[in-house]
Length: 230
Ligand code: TIU
Image (cartoon, rainbow, N blue to C red):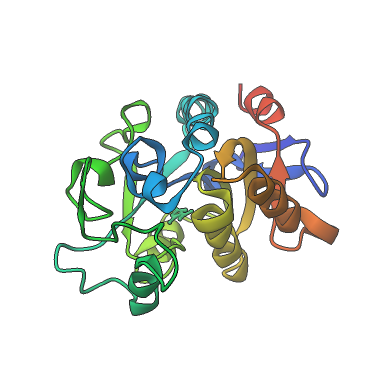
C-alpha cells in the first residue's frame, strides 16, 4: 500500500499517497527570473520572483529525498514561433499607446531570443536544473496541459496528486493548477515556492485556488510540507 502523507493546508489538510504524487516545478527559467529576460521586459518585479528560488530548491530537495516523481516545465516556442498561440504572440507586442513591450517573444534579448527553446534564457536557473531521471515538459502556452504530453506522462506513472511550485503565481502556476483540477488531479500549491510579478497578484492567486472548499485545489506553507516529507 502507498505510504500516505498529510500536512496542514487550506481549505483543509492535504493528504496524498507518496508514490502517486509528483512535484511540478513550473517555469523556473532565467527568462522569468533574471535581469534582461522576458519577465523584466514585461515590467515584472524580479526581486519578488527571485525570492521563490530558495524555497523551491528546498522543496525540490525534500521531494527528491522522499523519492517522489519530479516534473519540470519550461515555457517557450520553437525557433520559427509556429507553435505560439496567435493570441499570445499578439499580446506581447506593443499595443497602441503602450511602449512597455520594446521586445516581443522571439526577439533577441540579453539572454538570447526571448522564450525560444534552446536559448540560454529559456533554460532553468542554475539552482533548479533537473536531474537526468526527472521529466522536463516543454510547453508552448501558459498552462502545462495544452499541447504537451504531461497528462499522458502523469497517467503513465499512476499519478493522482500534485505539489505545485514555480512562477508566476498569476500566470503559469495558477493556470496549471486549474488545468490539473479539471483533469481530476488533487493539487496543492506551495506558497513560499511560488511568486508573482506583483505581490497582490500572488495573494489573489493563492486565495482563489483554495477559496470555499478548495475551488481549484489546496495551498500550503512550505514548512509543514518539509516536516511531513522528512
Ligand atoms: N508573464 C508572466 O507573468 N508569466 C509568463 O508569461 N509565464 C509564466 O508565468 N511562467
